[in-house]
Each structure stands twice: as C-alpha cells, then as structure tokens.
Length: 300
Image (cartoon, rainbow, N blue to C red):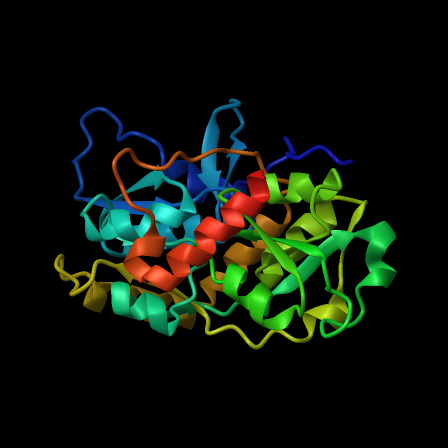
C-alpha cells in the first residue's frame, strides 16, 4: 500500500496555507468568512503538512473558498466537522458557508439555500479491490448480498440502495474509514463521487474502479456553496458574483490540477458537535431511519 500522504508539495497549494495562517502583527484585520467542511474527501478537502510539517487544509474546495474570500476582501477561517452535521450547524449559525463537494439536490434545497454551481463533478463511481474487479461488471446482477460503503449523511446511501440491486449499505462518517474497511476486506465496495474515487484508486495499487457497474449512476447536478436557509447573512449575491469570476478565469480546473500533484491525504477525524442532531433530522425522518439502519449494520 502506498503511504497516505506525500511530503512533496508544490507552491500552487500555498493558497491553502493562507486559509489557516494568522494575520501578521500590525496588519489590518479583515472580516472573517467561516467555512464549514469535512476534511476527509480528497481531492476536495483534506489535510496535508506544509513545508514546516504543520498540518493545514488543502483541496479544490479549500482553494476555491480562499479565492472567494480574497475576492470578497475577507479572511477565511476553516472549521472541520463530521459531514453528517454540517447543514444543521450551518443553520444554527456556526458557519457562514459550507463547502464539502455538496450536490444541491431537492431535499437539501428545502433545508438550506445554495449558490450557483461552482464546479462540475463527474458521476459517482464504485471503488473495489482490484483482485475482485471481475466480480463487478453489472450493477443490476452483481450486488446481491454485497456490502457497499457510503458516507453517512451523503446522497451515496440512497443512490447505492436505488441503483445497486440487492446490496447491503454500510454507512460510516469518514470516507477514510470506509476506504480502510474496503482495503481490509470488511466491505466489498465503496460508492464515492467520481473525482474522489479516482483519487483513492490512484493512491492504492490494490484498489480499482468498477467502471461498467458505475455506468448506472446519472450525471452530477454539480457542486454549490450552502448558506443557511433564507440567506440571513445576505451572502448569496456576493458569492455568486465571485463564482462567476472564478468560472470566467477557469480557476476550478487550475486548482484541480494543482491538487492533483499531491499523492495522498492525511486521515483526519471530525467529531459530531455535542448536543446537535445530525442532518438526517433536518433532511427528513425517512432519511434518518435509513441512516440508523445502515449505521447499525456497520457496527453489528
């Protein structure tokens, strides 16, 4: 197995260092833009050591968030949280924005508001062990009794159940834990956003993407920034203006290319906030029941 993190970094990722750096003495203090994310989802958000060995945030979403903060003349502050609690915490005012490779589907749009699309993701892909690749050619026939990992609170839980006939979904909070379960033979496959699956497959020689079985998944709706329902801080107009400029300058592809040179990600944990209900309650009782059942299957 390849080591999870590369020490060789490039200057193009210095942008992300600024996201966690303090202002120099005497510098004019800027208004703060607080970003909520879940830093276990390379290439979009993860942690890596800078040249001094200090762990900092990096990834496509982090670089885009820094671009937007700079455009707005604000200081970016990053808060790491379990993915399944991000939207609830956003509505409670813990963050100004949430960026975590979030697809603005219909259910989420009822719970929070979204910016314009800032990045187009490739469709979901199934990550499997390379030695088992021949077993997964047809999503309609090859998944009876197969355990498929999906991140708790993500759309992957429902998409796995709907499209992989007969599968047993195992839900865990951290994608890094899901990948470790796959490597160690505890689950048979993991369903991830396309870019994330490609990132992990490139880092683990023993993992591969089941391309034929993955063809069942539809095109992505794209990725957007979430703000609290009703946009109480009045951010959407400025965010959309910054996104338009970012797209005009093709910065998304530039940042993706910069992130691509990093050979791995650091495994990080993000605890659930004390006293908070998960986003499952925010998004609906039916989804909460699914999450409870799949979490029980994971630990049972």
